[in-house]
Image (cartoon, rainbow, N blue to C red; front, side, top):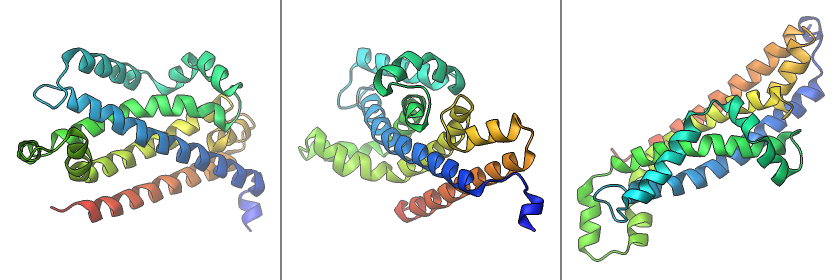
Length: 222
């Protein structure tokens, strides 16, 4: 019955494409989380009236974040072709998509990290400073724990965006479900392939959202 409804589906190929999408998403989410928190912390700490107040550094990082956050992802992939070839050696395959995925998502997440940190009660930070806490202590014991619900919520939104980015990267040969939907589904007019690939992507997105919401609700002390 299933073969009659979906005559063009090669399930081994579909599973392989799903694994490629999960691989690209997992690696890029991990790197984005790490880099985004660093960028967001520096943005926050170098801002006005904060611990490392420095207008010049804040302006430089803010400009970097705004520029890369604003470039459409499909254009960013093309712009990063020389960089990707230099560090990966190819523009084909799931590894070739990782530089663009990370560079495209990290600035977006960094801004969300900064917003989360700004929501922390200034009184809590001032109390830690008045007790002689070092900057590193304030970061690890105050800023990150207090903003963790916002950080998790932000990485959830970013992860879902990255799933969409992997589909776009697939169109230019990065592999995954996007590549399968484009080559097998669209170009060969096999609508069932496109449909199944889309459903799997939606399932991945729903699972990410459910996990993110669950963790956020556990961390939120309000």
